[in-house]
Amino acid sequence: MATMTLSDIAKKLKKIDFCMLATKAETGAISTRPMSNNGDVEYDGDSWFFSHDDTNKVADIRRDPGVTLSFTEPPSLLGKPGIFVSIEGRATVIRDRTQFQEHWVEGLERWFAQGVDTTGLVLMKVHADRIQYWDGEENGIVQL
Image (cartoon, rainbow, N blue to C red):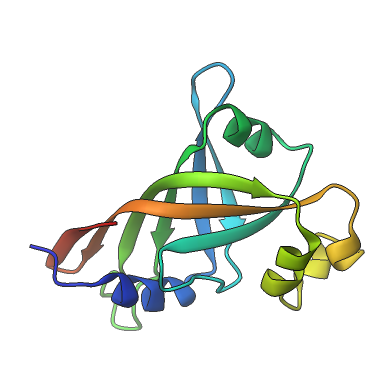
């Protein structure tokens, strides 16, 4: 039985910068790549990622918005494994500069030199439908 809530999961995800985003490629294969959520995880189950519009992941999402995010927290100093989180959801590609500004954080200029004015910039929103987690002996599913 799940004892963690969506709020508990969101707090954990704020501490994990990178995840793996899995999409369905044009060939039908699962395509996975690392993404940074920049700590931008809301308590309503949304995760946000910036990208360039001309990438395979954006093309994949246009074809099939069903995605999976996989997060892994590093082990503690004592070696205890951190939490593992798998999020199944629907991705949306956003081209609204106002939303870019709402989700922009310092440091993104490394990948997007002109900030929110970067040509071809898009924001991807993944809204969770189902979250599975494993945290030590505890595991569960949060259905949204």
